[in-house]
Length: 244
Image 1 (cartoon, rainbow, N blue to C red):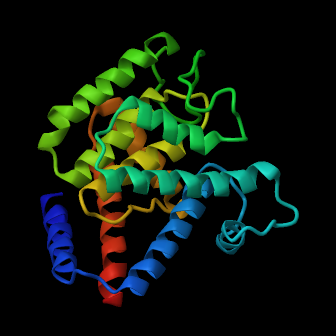
Image 2 (image 1 turned 180 degrees about the vertical axis):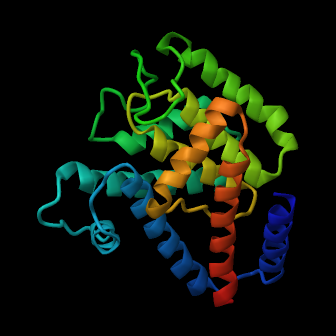
């Protein structure tokens, strides 16, 4: 892992040395990342829109034969990314209110009753060995997450911190629905705060992603998950460097 983090840091330093970056190059990369991030994050959760169909929906066009929910998932995810970008720009500290706002945007118009509201019932994660904590302790677990983030997490490499933030959050599973999308938004919020591009977890790597998360939750070993996140950060960095 140290070698991978070192390689990422070298590429990030190289990218920083090229700043200010060309305006339209940055704009085109950002739009591509927003599309890839939205498509893959939704596809992992079962959204059937293709990459090109997702692009069309982001442009404001309705795709025939697809559900209203699938369209909203795309539109909402874009709005959540824009909100994450605003948090990064304003350099706000991570807090529960932000997390609830991100989730509120993810579920807006889909499940308004539960949008931004911690769950009031118990759930299981389909196919996983890990069982999320009882709903009665969700609020305490989220406060513990913020305390962890403000203390021990700050000693970690930013990529590792982002991966563990995602993992711990989704382990708590604080909401009835939309936890996965919110977790990936939080992960990338942390990466972007530290100057890294978004880590796009690919839908085709869904099984590896779920297995690495379950391993982290049941053994507290985050190496596989951190490696997966780091590899995707490196791919995003390579995209920038290739075009500069």
